[in-house]
Amino acid sequence: FFSSTVLVFLCIQFGTEFISLVLCLATGMKTVPVFENPLFASSTPSNFWGGRWNTLVHGLLKRAVYKPMRLAGQHRFVAIATTFIVSGLVHEYVWSVMFYVHNHEKDEDGGCSSCFTYATGKVSLFFIWNGIVIVLEQIFGGSFIFQWLRVVLPSTMKTALVILTALPLAHLFTGDWTESNYFKHYAIGMPIIVKLS
Image 1: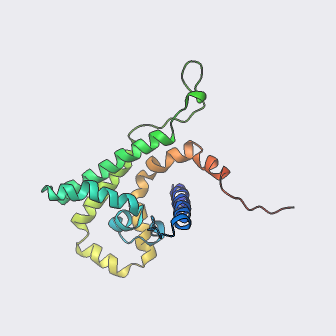
Image 2: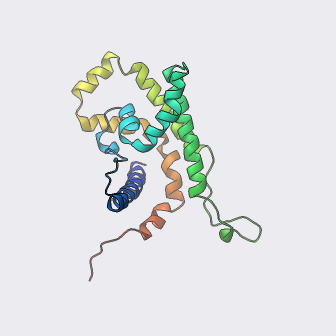
Image 3: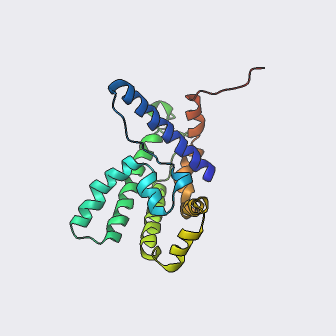
């Protein structure tokens, strides 16, 4: 599943970098990086989700969900959990658009036996899991053992452990991309370098 995660990351990264390049060339303005090497430099789950993975969406969710809940007096754990639930719902919408079955793809009876249909709720479950991981990090991250590990482990080992917290349910996020042949369709638009014989 890690290889699927890397592929998803690279697809999104390429798309955001391409859009950034076009905007920069068209306007002369510098854009903010969307990813900060999340798969190879994260030190904690909070660092992964809060500072490295899709910082654009993180900022939006923080301003739209987390901060208003905290200002309304909600406990930070409730605000964290709600933010991840909202993220899951937003991703459910994105999945419904990505895997939408168009009329020209449907059979005469209105179905599509050759089309991929995703199971609603899987993506939300993935984000709920990661919300739980963040809350657990907030509760136990200050304990002696975690502070000690933070000091003695090399950064690559810490990043591997961070990725392992999401791995048990990573297939709920990346599985649909693989099963729907999304990467094969994406590859059609990518330049490929091949050796000529």
